[in-house]
Image (cartoon, rainbow, N blue to C red):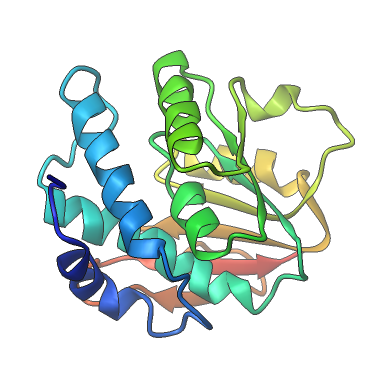
Length: 203
């Protein structure tokens, strides 16, 4: 039996999806499976410090989906996105579920986390690529229409490293407790349930 029924997940996510152009039919069922996998793996390896299922849905799933909804209108069809330091898959995996035509790469150098990401992608039958190493050793020619960062260590250093991975005219997306002071950035407050900001900067 799933940890949370899909109707409860849908209710928790309502404030985060107001700006979403569409919601895939199977979104909540896939998120339910993702939640169960995350809780099972988190019991034996520390993927996230948030343990309470409804808080995971709000903070991890909701914030990621909110960012994806605001990114959607800015990206071309079949765009590419790099999740820089993906951890347990946020924001990249929920964005992949919201925007199934997006080509998402999850970069995560910690072996236990990259193994978990591959398991989620396999279980949910996603086309998502997992890059199990540091972003800096991606081939230099690889650039993306969007690069996303959330809760990474040394955010300012990570932003500097991420900028060179954004294709011309692409977007740098950050999720943080404070708006990022990037020139020309658009700072969007998260819903009241999740104090923080999504910052979008076109490069």
